[in-house]
Length: 154
Image 1 (cartoon, rainbow, N blue to C red):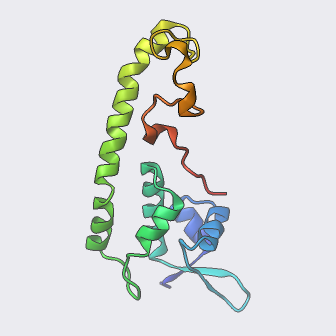
Image 2 (cartoon, rainbow, N blue to C red; image 1 turned 90 degrees about the vertical axis):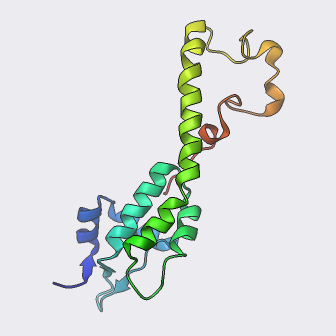
Image 3 (cartoon, one colour; image 1 turned 45 degrees about the vertical axis):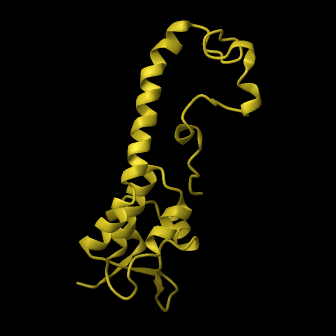
């Protein structure tokens, strides 16, 4: 069995669309070799890399953060379980922060929805006199982690 996979094979096995594979290659997350007919071929180890990218996106890491993390993997060999474990440990505090932020949102959501106004501009309880306006646009009372948009790939 060859260690090189076609784009179709990688797409099918990883669940990533071919357009995502091309984009990830363009932004430096993946590498491909080319055949004489200019078709992409990927090392089998790209499947683990794509699983890492998917997990990292679900945690909320940006593509830049993912690229930086992947850059710490050893060059010239397929990453080992220890390499992946080392990388994933760096997410622990981020996950803890996300859990705390989501718990705060969950715990405060009932009272906000129960209020009925659903407006931070007029709400006498959460935002009397619209004092949140100087803090900027959006839901400024949400934890920052839940306000920042995750930059989606093209």
